[in-house]
Image (cartoon, rainbow, N blue to C red; front, top):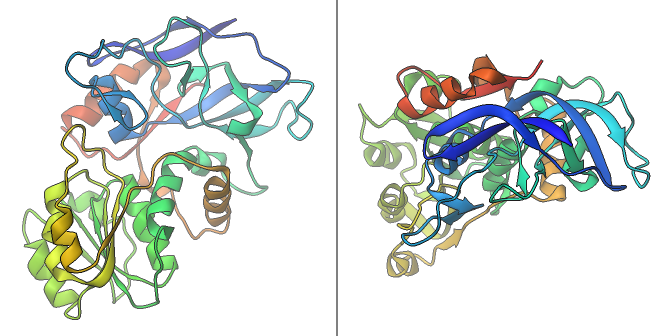
Length: 333
């Protein structure tokens, strides 16, 4: 079966080309994609050749991890359903994660492909009244939600979120919803300004202000939780002296082959480290429900909408950072 896809064929070489995908099975749904949302950090590291799958880093001696179809989140219109699928109808607009690819690819699944032959287990119905575009980032939003729900939080607890990217925003939104006071740190005023803070919250641009001193003044009794979404072990460890005994560290960043943390420093305060990854149906359902209720916001983080044929430009903008880039939508229509 023929399809179109975003394909990385070599480090930093991304094209929009024709590909082969398997014929759909009785448990599949075929979707004509209308929009897909790039996961900037994850997909860029795949395109650079830094990962071989999921959170597994490429190591010296491994074969090149190409060709691949990056991505894992999109929306589109159902064109066909297998005979074992009874709860999805042709003509519905749905969200989908990864879809099936033919054998020429390193990984048998990918995100940016249409028509998308997708197992029913990786398709979500969009609630009535919800803007489908707001759901087109559901996997990545779920990562932020996962960061914000992995540990107990008592209203008033002080939580630091390291990183002003999309996962950082959704982690911060989730923690605020749960009653935590949140301080987000980052390097981009444009991104930091997008977080709706109360009088109890803070944003800190670390290029102008020492985040540790800011945290001491903001939470003089100590931090309950620190969430790293930027992939910086040194930043995560720097906050340990400011944490309360029995606090939690949460890591959603990608560290490649350098993800080493000093456990003894954690033991001094009896801290726990959590490393959420991937997605589950339960977490995706919970995240979708919060988007539908307006508690988690997504579309205000979109900065660029490009035709999918300009995907090379999209990744160049993300990697070069020559302008303010956050949420990047690929338009397949």
